[in-house]
Image 1 (spheres, one colour):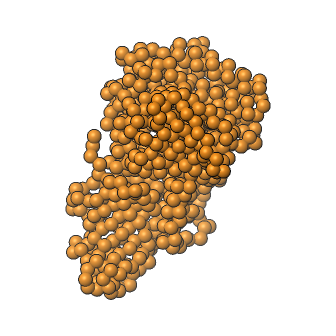
Image 2 (spheres, rainbow, N blue to C red):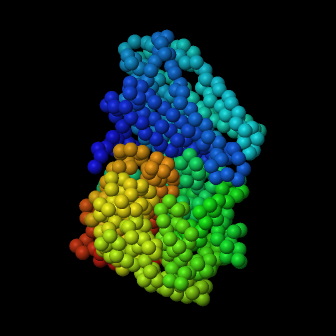
Image 3 (cartoon, helix red, strand yellow):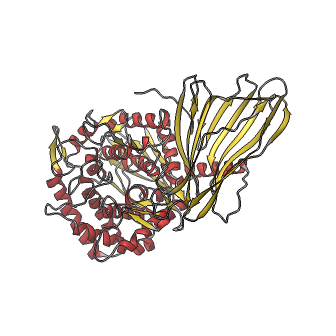
Length: 635
């Protein structure tokens, strides 16, 4: 295992520089901006800083997925100490939801703390700088004003783009005294007034959001500090990437390319089942907005829905054909509605659910599985005419659709959906069940002869007929490497979404002790080594971008993997605990699903688990469960 560069200190991570040159990259988002910051030290030990700022509301071209205004900056604000311009030598980097860089000048006279963060509600990114005299004598500090303006032509006019910092008049600073200065990067619509922020207030607003997402809902305690910390960071990254658009708040992947747009996999399959648990209403609103955008495309001719709706809801992208998008939508919307716990919302969206079921029915092949042109990898790897992922997502979506139909008193639809699910499950086994590379597992498509990472998908939807051999294959060196699962046996390309589905699926299969070491390896790699502290998209494509929904998938490794949490009604859910023996107790507090708030605590007993459910009224209910047993909980 690669050694950790960072160390964990409660809910922050710290890199203490030791002289080696290194840079890393992180993405942070506010409501109207996303900042991709590359930071570190160069070969001389001097601060290196590059910012790529994206403004989702400032479209550069109409009806283009990638047409978000982007601005790049390498210049570092300079300060003069005793009349000389200093170079900054970092000795510590800290991330706690904002990035803090601690440096000193070559003579050790002053320290410079830069706090880097996107504004929570404005089209601005700030570097809030504090210089402190660390010597035993007064020092003179000064800085020139920075006032840069350029203009970018876009779909909504000409956008003013500005960089500003006020001058620091030359002043003697006594020992241990400090001065504060803000460097502000912003852009705006032509008729908007310039934004003049208070850096300290904006930093406080950013940290209020961090605290809210860390602790106000779905707070995890396992005794594994790294796991708990990465879970908190995952909640932040999953929920911060929500941008104000003409269609209302929309969750978007980020990564420098994907803003003010939604996808059926990232936003609806990956993130929507997770967001109701957070108690962050902006995230739930973003889910509803994403779901609404697809409804106009659900025609009676049963033509496919688009893979993505782009440009603030003004256009579509469907370049990969049918990726199984209706199956993704069916799976995500039903899980979201059940966990959200509002019958009126489920009634509102029921026609969309039924359309997806009818569409999937229309795509049943002569072998009884669901045909699609591709899958979420959009042709990067072969998927045949019918792939395992699309059929499994359809199966899981049908089960949840049947639960919704039951809750709404639609008995005929419940029966219809349940029967379709039963038929499909049998056909998944008959068509995809196969021996591949010596493992009695699944082929991903007809003609597939190499192990694929997505053989994990049946385990995540409760299909465990081939679980033993599938787990063996997933954890073998044919698939699991230094960065998690590779997409295909013999290929080095990896996508974190497959690893995160696999970790969840292996836990669902009851192999918690066997997979825990792999989970620890993954957490150490992502939280404390490179591209910290979030799940990433892929490599080599995108060079491990911090796409937002992958962090939702990481959190679901715990909620749906370790706890086995599956919503079954507007006030009920199943639990199937699968907790590694190394973790004596797993507690999930302030779960804000089902229009309620409650805690779940799982402890090991001699041959299973003791599960305590504590709602707001404080009346604790205790359940005993054997290994592998499913508990049905009614709130």
